[in-house]
Length: 244
Length: 244
Image 1 (cartoon, rainbow over the protein chains, first blue to last red):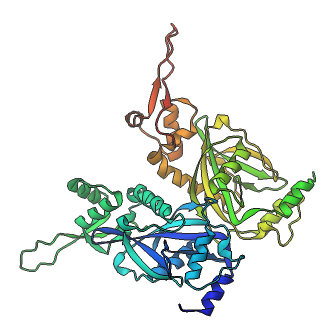
Image 2 (tube, each protein chain N blue to C red; image 1 turned 90 degrees about the vertical axis):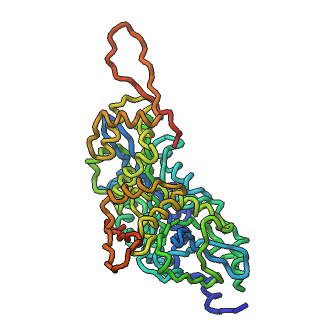
Image 3 (cartoon, each protein chain N blue to C red; image 1 turned 180 degrees about the horizontal axis):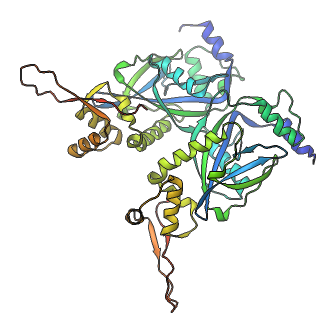
């Protein structure tokens, strides 16, 4: 096991952070018609977790969320939305913290800041899967995409945080056209429909879906290049609505 | 000015609270076809504020929100929803805190907990106007209903918190049928339409509105009592949908 003195010092004497508040991110990407979620696995343990972190003393909450996810994905200006604060008094578990720290060879002294109570602000992030470069944090040995139907048991209330995020996302999908954040710059109507079906967890009628999407006035159809050969490729579209 | 030693001690040495986190409540009631909001005015100052408070060290976040509003309205089991966390680093203002405390003859020592940074969790509450009994807290001399178009300038970012609550409420109105929390047990179709129009800030077509509401299968029409005299009173309805 690697010992890293700076790391030890940081976690043992965690300095200038806003007390009591953490951030957890439900980070979703879309790839091969599958919605995927970004998860960490802590070193030398079986604990999986949502990417998360803390707020520096003079840092805006929204900046902290962006910074935390930039560190895990390499992306800036991520589409991020707060969706719920998880504030139950029984969401602490000192033993879990001790095991995670022990996996990194870090001793938890009784006054370690992690042993205080935290409320956690849940954000969902919708990112273009192809652009992210997942990177583990200093306590974890992997940061990877998981299919939504293969999410392992997560630590604390992180499974509940995920479920609440998905519920909110379903409610907000039409309201805010947020799904486009999950697609590359150009996409086929079929890809768009697959995305909606995946998030909503139900099949949609193709003709109705296409009519509805086109009626919103937010899609630009990209003209095909003339190649001489018969061109059977589907039309590509680009999102030209208001950015969210 | 009344001096209250217990009060002084409490605010000068505020004891077992979760650091960094406050709660602010946008509390709406509906009366005489007007949407109204509950506001406090601090003693001997011109500062108006949303009702709010803090979280006890071992108290669930949701319980804290219920407790805070029970103290201001006398009501239990209020319909309350988190809608946003306000976490900008510049939402502090030490001078404002000092003026409010001076108005109550309380000295702010440099280490007073109120001078730390707080993020605030916004809740909106929808209550039956007729059942609430507004009561000021120990720092304020009034707790009253104000028409939405007559809201005074509020302290800190409380006007922004109100605007965000109203925006969320408009988005969620159809999604969750939450408007019924603002009505007494029985109401006319006209009262229901007035409520929707007031929240949405726009006029609705009567026949469409009535058809839509009846089609949801959530309204029970109460049969009129036979009185002998011609009865021109409108039908009364009762909400029989799933409780939110």
